[in-house]
Amino acid sequence: MHPSSPLVAFLFGLLLAVASHAEGGHEGHATHGAHSTEGAHAEPSRQAGILVENFALLDHRGAFHELRGYADRSAIVLFVHGNGCPIARHALPVLHELARELKERGVAFLLLNANLQDDRDSIAAEAREWQVELPILVDESQLVAEALGVTRTAEAIVIDPRTWRVAYRGPVDDRLHYQTQRPARAHYLRDALEDVLAGREVAKPLRDAAGCLILFPEADPAAHAEISYSETIAPLLEQRCRSCHRSGGVAPWAMTGYPMVRGWSPMMREMLRTKRMPPWHADPDVSHFRNDISLDVSELRTLVHWIEAGAPRGEGPDPLANSPRPPPPEWTHGEPDWILELPEQEIPPTGVVPYRYETIELETEEDLFVRGVELKPSNARVMHHGLAWIRYPKGHAAPRVQGPRFTRGMFAAYVPGRENEPFPDGAGYFVPAGSRLRFQLHYNSTGRAETDTPRLGLYLAEAPLRHELKTGSVARFDFEIPPGAREHEEEAVAEIDRDILIYRLSPHMHLRGKRMSIEARYPDGRREMLLSVPRYDFNWQRQYVLDPPREIPAGSTLHVRAAFDNSEHNPANPDPSVPVRYGEQTFEEMLFGYFLYRDLDTPLAATD
Ligand code: HEC
Image (cartoon, rainbow, N blue to C red; front, top):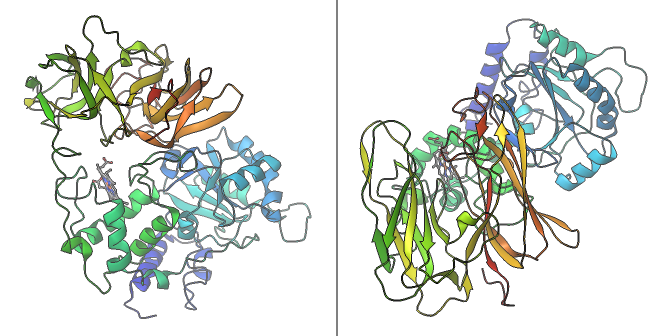
């Protein structure tokens, strides 16, 4: 290993971080881990005292956990679990007992599974069989376990949320070894927790843990330094990030070449490890979506490993610099056939702006078949959202929809973070001659007077469309979220009264929205989870395009389960001290599971 290699620099930095924290008494530090010069595989950083950077993982039930989300706890225990490991299994009763006992004192207990051979289903099966009550975080990329220097299961890692450092790591007690089963004499984990709760240092913060060795085939920093920017990283960024991270794109910075990427690399690592980027919020184990932009596990590993190796430039051309992406086109799907302009809107510099409504006449004698639509502001700073409805002429009834009536004729939306997906083939909206269009516009003030002139672009079909699209919803209006509630659950159910085909799903809540799932229960008793968004983000109100679309027979029900966080721990919460009810403004709440669908009264093939 050459002393100037990025790997050495990285490890050296790690050592400095550890050393600078070793404020005496931490004898465990110097005797293990990264001091070894035998090569990268020799337990690179199994240390106490190290800083635990933020991360986010889903557990075996699909629930979202972010380390910093436990900031208000007195201590956090991460116990390294693994299916089929007898030592880990033996430790469970003690862990459960401790978890119950210390719950009131604010200690959080989480299990961590980083085994490559275990997946969510097998972990859930192990949890059922061994009655595991604690959440098992699934570290399928191994990035969290690698950064912690984990080598074996059955290790307990105590994190002190005041410093985010490892206060203790080692076995739960002295009972557990490979063969012996004598009663415990020393209760290391319990004692360490008592120390942390009392604000004392743990006398021996690092102990060898006997557990099952975990295979980390890619935890080899020397190999990470060889990952090619030119051939591997740049194409990955091009494919996964540059649709937004380009000049004129929606992201705040553009991936214009290596210097930009290198400069942003630590922040990229943080966004990747906390699942904030790329912005895709559906649980990857539930359904399949055509517009999924998430990274797969191996892409995630490669990108983060390259960054951890110091984001080396290496040899070869710089594809990001050599082929700059043109700015996005004005209209996502090319020049519309007809562009309608709404009256100019004046937005006051401050204050809450009530919803605005505009109605425009369609000046045409002809029936229109709309095969595509885009509603957009001229000033994206101020428009929060816009919706458009068809108002049918006298004598033409608005088409019935599933769920509350207000989605009848709804046919265009501009909402935060939504990409403008094309309509399914052969489907669209029928706009009879004499219709008017009705708009709801919601603006945010910015601190200065602003204007906006929204436009609606219509793409027209010559011949009649085969299918009429509709928006339905599963909704709830009668809820109240108590002040300070951290996890307020609500459920909404809609009965489907005719055979339909659902193309897309779209959860909608406001700033307290925390998670939402949408499940179909079929007349034959079968249940299918269609979408789960374990951490809802108000800024990204996507449509999840089901692949394939789902037939939902008459007599089925759609169940939406949602949770709201009205506590101070929700950084988006405008006011944790008030009860929150249904309302239009962002500081009020909504609970909608929208779905784009068509009636299946004709036996036509699904063609999305
Ligand atoms: C669909 C558009 C989109 C895609 C795809 C996307 N980003 Fe972003 N990115 C954004 C937006 C918008 C922001 C601004 C913060 C926000 O809204 O969350 C952002 C912010 C970031 C930031 C933090 C900078 C800041 O100011 O907050 C980083 C780092 C980042 N993205 C990296 C990535 C990487 C790496 C990828 C690909 C793996 C990626 N992004 C893919 C839209 C995108």
